Image (tube, rainbow, N blue to C red; front, side, top):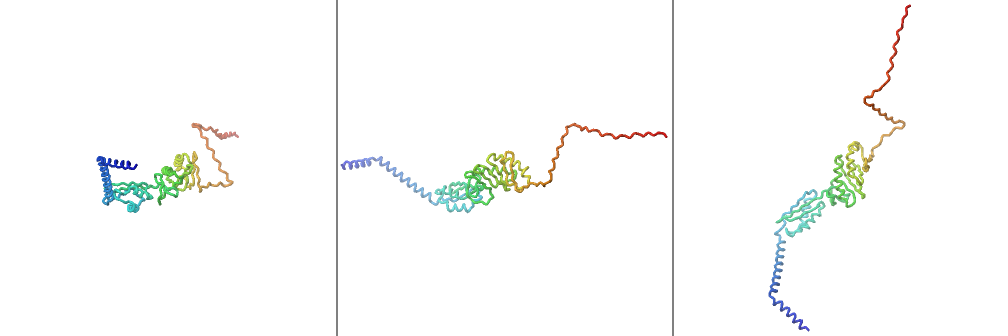
Length: 293
């Protein structure tokens, strides 16, 4: 039983070597694989040779908070490799770790230049005491000594509060008031704290219309009073309520009657004349008749 199996194997082997075309095809395939491996090895060696170093690194952007020392530290410790082997994704992520960096663009420029474009966060306000909010309504963690307004509200409402702050700031500009704190409750009720310490209660509806009416009425009302305004409720349809702590009405003295209001004079119709009775004329004394004696 074992002999037929050995005979079959011998026949198969003999048949493969008896086909020169197949052998030529296998030989060409092996040569091609060897050539590819050789080319890959040569390319790997050439790419990693120090003959293609990055000689220039250009950092562009309007940088107000990112320092030269921070950039130099990243270039020295994070940007590794030649012009071809430098990891662009790793380089970008290294710059994004800086607190004031919003976006980074890294690209190669032949033959030996690396261009890095940085965009900084533009701080618009503070998000409570936790973080900062940029002009795009995005939160970021950074330190700032600037006097920035404070935003308070539910998580996820950063963009709404940022846009609302910009609009309210523009609306209050004609009366020379600035918002220092803007709060949005869970029920979407708006409250503004101004730079003079007063609070404006705007409610949930018609926020812009209510604030616009207040700005229009301010010069002739609160703006003409030399008093401390603590709170203004703008939720009334035809006006607003004001709380002034230092306002005290004048007391009325007891026993002193209030002066009666003068009755308004009745206007006379045009062309009317007043008929008054004429004053009687004084009687003339009669002449006395003299008689002859």
